[in-house]
Amino acid sequence: FHRSHDFREGALLAVNLGDDADTTGAVYGQLAGAFYGASGIPEAWRAQLAHRELIVALATLRPRPLSYAAPASRIVAAFIAIFLIGGIAVPFGVVSRVSFEGAFTSGGAPFLNLFELFINSIRAMLLLILYLAYVQGRFGESVGKHLLNLCVVRLAGFPISFKTALTRTICAYFLVSPIALWGDLPVPRPLLIGLGVIGAIFTMGYGLATIDPRRQALHDRLSGTVVVYKV
Image 1 (cartoon, rainbow, N blue to C red):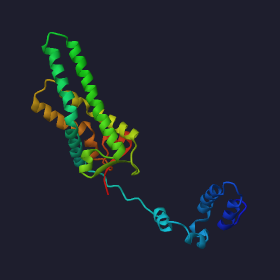
Image 2 (image 1 turned 60 degrees about the vertical axis):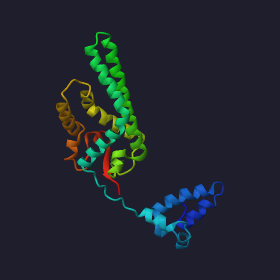
Image 3 (image 1 turned 180 degrees about the vertical axis):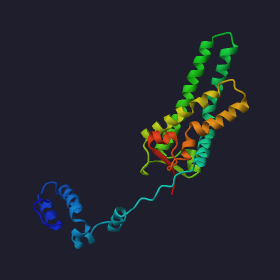
Image 4 (image 1 turned 135 degrees about the horizontal axis):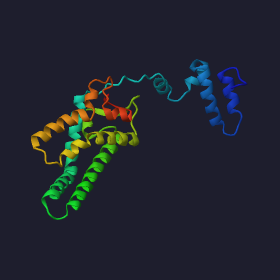
């Protein structure tokens, strides 16, 4: 590159050095291509380029603006996911509630009953976290989001990794964990439902999503993600 005066001359010098000529030519092509631009490459060479149209299309591609999901759609998607996974998680919740009540009604071993409550709560928590982290890290969406044509992406629009999905899910879970614990307390059902709905909307940060330009809930901000409509 330093000893040549144009793209063609430098490319011929590079590939005729011998040995690993294809790699040497590729490295030179990247440097010289950035310096001379596409117009600096001989037209005869460009005409023989494999998949030229595709390369030109990708090079000139402009990302579409992200369409951020409305908070209402996200809340519906969250409830769908909760109801669908409830078939697995509910048995743990039933055992926990029985154990919790037994700690106050039985004269046996309340400590063991409370310990059983704790263990089953941990199992349910891990089950929910691993499920959501896996499906969102692998597919970018939970079942509820898939049904509503939503997906989770990075701020720049790229897919999220399992690590990011796990961080996001843990943040979301611990924001709503007080609501999950209310289910094991002796609270009247109408009051419990009212507190649960209000707490789910605001504690999960969806109140923040209604005023945020990118519709980010609190756990989205903590994990650097956004929920968008799929195109």
